[in-house]
Amino acid sequence: MENRGSAQLVLLAATLILSTVIRLLPYLANSTFFSTDIWGVVRNTNILVEHSPISLNSSLFDGYNNYWPTTAIELSVLSTLLGAGVFHSIEIAVSAITLSLTTVLFSLKKGWSGVLAAIVAGSAFNIVLMTGAYTKEGYAYTMLMIILYTLLKPGRVHPLIMVIPAIALPFTHHLTTLVATVILYSIIITWLMSFFHQLEFFRIDPTRAIYIAVPLLLSQLAQYLLLGKYSTLAVATQWLALSLTSYVTVFSVIGIAISLVTVRLKAPVLRFFTMVFLASAVAISTVGSLYIYMLDYETLTATLLIVTPALLIIAGNVYSREETAVTSIIWMTAISGLAIFFIGEEVPGYESIVYRVVGFIILIASVGFAGRTKWFHRVSAAVFLVASVTVYALTMTGLTPTLGWYWNYRESEVYTGRFLSEKAVGLTVCSDVKQSMMLNGLYKYKATNLPSCSRSPILMYDYMWDKGALVSVGRVVKIWFQEVGGIVFSNGDGFLII
Image 1 (cartoon, rainbow, N blue to C red):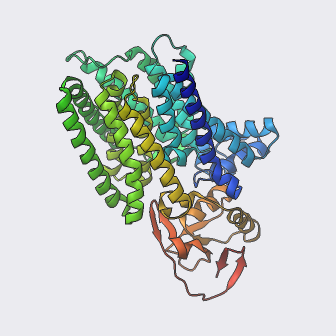
Image 2 (spheres, one colour):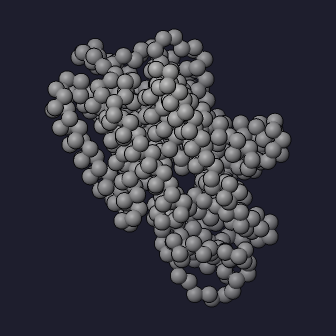
């Protein structure tokens, strides 16, 4: 028994180290961040350090991330306390987020199920993307996991553990807040249905859900009135709210029905339907990836390398029939309803949102690991780890670049942005989405996106004709150009053409 506990601790320590290293590798290799989403947070942090106190509505901020200011505020405090630069502070924060996320999962599940849950959350490629830098979403993952911890943890939980993340989450990240709201809503629907039909798998205390939901909703209202109404949340309408509620309600009910069938079917029948689920889910993932992202075959293969092991984990959870695993089915179907809402209503940027929703489903799947793990759980977790590391290697080497290679930035690209912001004031350049995100976010420098450049000077890099220029989520176009004017600036691997 002691040897088993030691093996678990060794494997957990190895998981924590591996999870941290794969997130820090891009920084160690390039001295900059692995994220297109971090630049606005970096700008806002610098503004807070240099100009505090300052209104969050100030035009000095990037005009987007300042409406969810938690990450920038905490990063500015960390940078000031440590006396370190923002770049170094971010890497410390990334390590802390990784350790917190995996530790919360392990403390919730404990034993082998806790180790396996930590492996999945620590290595999942979607989650690595979001936590590879100090993004709003990556930071919000930990808050979401603490909320799930308070819902699932047996025994007494201190009220502050429930209330603090519920209050902080709406000021941190809007999509994660929506996911938490959807989960709580599905719990309340399940609780209401339990009055009309016995749901033997449902063991969550509804009062805990209410204790979390009330401060969460009040905090969302406060965020909207103070900041959100000036942001992209202003496009929300009553129709969208009604449509979202309808999608989530329907898919929550579907999840409840699946959960009921799961706990009542005989084992051989359940095994058959689990295999049908696996085959159907892989097929739907393939068609969905082709329809939404129009992926090439190499990238599609890598995508299925991520999706299939995740589905194996979900299938193992279903087959275990453990209460938490069965309840998590409802959460996953409710979140799937959220993704389908974004597609059905063609919400702007739905391609990115759907990709990110998959990350939340993987987190929920890790929560659902059975208390008494069987060989299938361990094999599926091992397969998931190998597949995730493989996809990470394929992406970082540029063999499947659309999955995340474009999130890598070199120092020369960052310095080029600084040069343009200082020496080419008032000029609007045209480049791909990768460069535009950095130029607009960090330097608030006007940039338009390829391939529609009009008469603007073009900021080109060698990767744009090698791997292609990123023109939207998951889509690249290889650029061929004829030099008409001349090169007015070059940093070695990139140049500005007029």
